[in-house]
Length: 265
Image 1 (cartoon, helix red, strand yellow):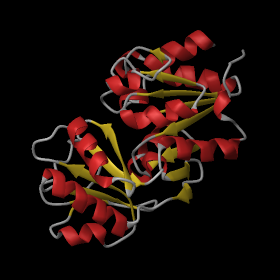
Image 2 (cartoon, rainbow, N blue to C red):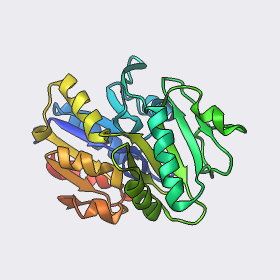
Image 3 (cartoon, one colour):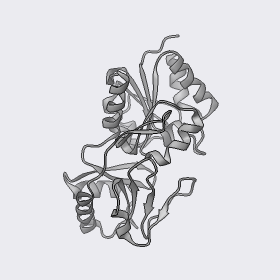
Image 4 (tube, rainbow, N blue to C red):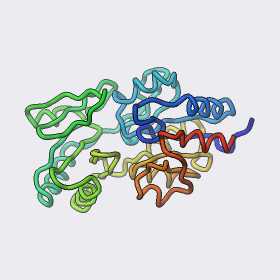
């Protein structure tokens, strides 16, 4: 059995995972067939390692994963962090003050660096229901007390797209701003993206961009699609990602990844 790509890169939420945070048997089988045919599978997620590990363990996934929007390359089999990039907290603070000068006060959460880094949630930040652990910080200063890989921002009135657009305009070249999912707008180190993390991981595997097929659903997947040979958006994807995808497959609920992989196999 042959497969035309050496690397399959999949986003996690809204892509590989169904809405109940599971991976279907059909998708597992398709990915197993792809790896049996000699290709590597890499998970590339906005989630930091502590929010990704349990899913990788459940999948029996032992390869490399790109986490934290590209900030972390993680070896799932060895439970080891191979690379980790942190956000300059002074720059982030300056960027946030510029955003707040334009749109008013923001609610914040912060993702701490490391294998066991907590996500600290500041006053007023709305946490999504689900199994992902977060620690509430009464004192906003606590968010800045240890190295971070990103800061999450929310606005009381602006929607995700409007907030990301306003923040991007305000921060200039201090940091990057990305919309990573419903209710998830993030401030990242300048130049960091899923593409930078994926290129690092691919280099470790001896695989090039021209050998890569990528799946995603959100604007934070746009750099990964630009890097990969082929980008496939899920039916449930954000319109900005669909606009740059070479192909649109079925939704994450309808085994969109498996549909494409089975055709290629």
